[in-house]
Length: 356
Ligand code: NAD
Ligand code: DAU
Image 1 (cartoon, rainbow, N blue to C red):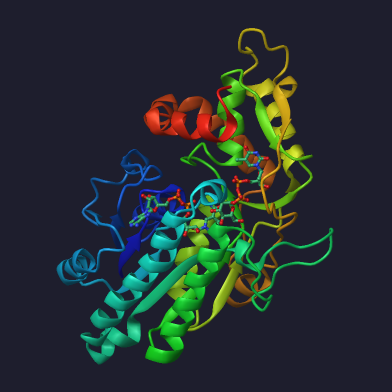
Image 2: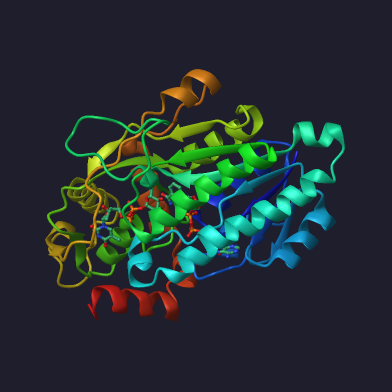
């Protein structure tokens, strides 16, 4: 299969590309605009492969996208390109509406025109796989309950509302135009190459720099964590074997309160990086409670029973093993970190957290 994958320079997209090149015989065309979150250094290990190609294109640019489809003639689309950070969507929703909604609409239209040029055999094989989030379901109150594929949509943030809208567009293109789509909704990912605006890498880097570890509110919010390589395997499993028109929820069965996650990171750092920054007696002393995120969702948790029963996918990492690997990776990959924590990253952290 030749997969046209959008957002391949991002956190999850780059993990999917590494998995495709290292563990399958598929080829991949990475279509990425290279926003602040896109980083080709995350693909260094695989970018020389003859099964990999890169096109720097904005998914909102229909002409450029048409050119990519014509040049590469893909067998499938896997769509990950998005603005992905909830806090940024609160500071500035416009880019989220543009890429996540308008961009998905443009990609669907270009893919549909291309699909109509395919032979009968090509149409039978073609798939449009839309990669989405559990945040479209809103939040769960209290400790019980799980998101299933039939949980009603109730997004809370500009980010999750734009993703919910993109899911609706994809399903409408299936029902109205017969585009053979697949949709996946996944929980919080973590692992190597994660941009350090998100909770886990932010806490690792701040702790190593002796900076405050900013916990929103009282830190009691719960997320269901999945190691990114488990997500990458799940996505290729769905692309290869999923039933057209179906949705699959993906999650790690790893629910943890934010404060507990931060404390575990501190404990791992005590073990793996015992030399503290100057003036810091213990990493946990850096934990600082800050103003809560507006509209903050309390709890997410995924029922991943369908993908497990029907397609045989299971996560391989536990939270303990995945978090240890992740902390170790950030301790060993300073040059990648330096490359992404440039001027624009510092502008964001100053803007959002203040000058500390
Ligand atoms: P990311 O922010 O790390 O990467 C996004 C990528 O998309 C970047 O490489 C960026 O350059 C590219 N991009 C952004 N706008 C673009 C545009 N207009 N045209 C082309 N490329 C563009 O995101 P991520 O965390 O890797 O998430 C990937 C996808 O998975 C998103 O659709 C997100 O909603 C979804 N998702 C993420 C998580 C998570 O925990 N990170 C969980 C579930 C679902
Ligand atoms: O659930 C899937 C979603 O997970 C994806 O769709 C999003 O793209 C991805 O960014 C992630 O969203 P979250 O908002 O859950 O992730 P984030 O890492 O931003 O925050 C995780 C939790 O930690 C959340 O409850 C907010 C809290 N938090 C986050 C930051 C950045 C803090 O307490 N302090 C922080 O500084």
